[in-house]
Every structure is written in C-alpha cells, then in structure tokens.
Amino acid sequence: MSVISIRIDEEVIKELNNLRKLKGYKSLNEVIKEAIKEYILKNKSLWSSREEVYNYFKKKNKKIRGLEDIHREEEL
Image (cartoon, rainbow, N blue to C red; front, top):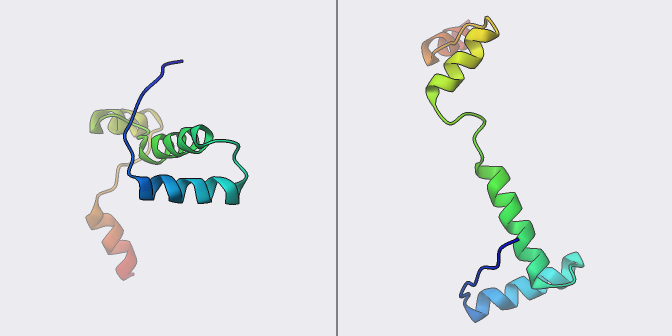
C-alpha cells in the first residue's frame, strides 16, 4: 500500500468529519478511501476504445445500432 499526502480546505475537512460521524466511520482515512473507490467505480469504463466495443459485439454476433435506428424505433 502507498501513502499519499493531500491538502484540503478546513471547510471540507469539517464537512467530511460531519459525514464521518453521521455514517459511522472511525476515521477520515476510511471516508477518503471509500470516496476514492466510488470515484473509480463511477468513472471506470468497460472498454478503453471503440474498437474493443466493436469487437465485443462482433464476437456476440450482435448488430451495433446507430442513433438513427433507435430514433426510428421510437417513432413507431
């Protein structure tokens, strides 16, 4: 495990401490680790490129539909 150091405004620290107490975390360290995990999960992409998406659907023998197809279906 690595150690990092960050600077955070006092107002943010106060809010984090309030949330820590409210949610029952033992330390700010736990809160920050949880926030980082959530950030990673929220921003993690299943595929790193369009080519990977294309190859995934090609292997599954599924048609890759464009927006035109979707809009056409909505009009029906």
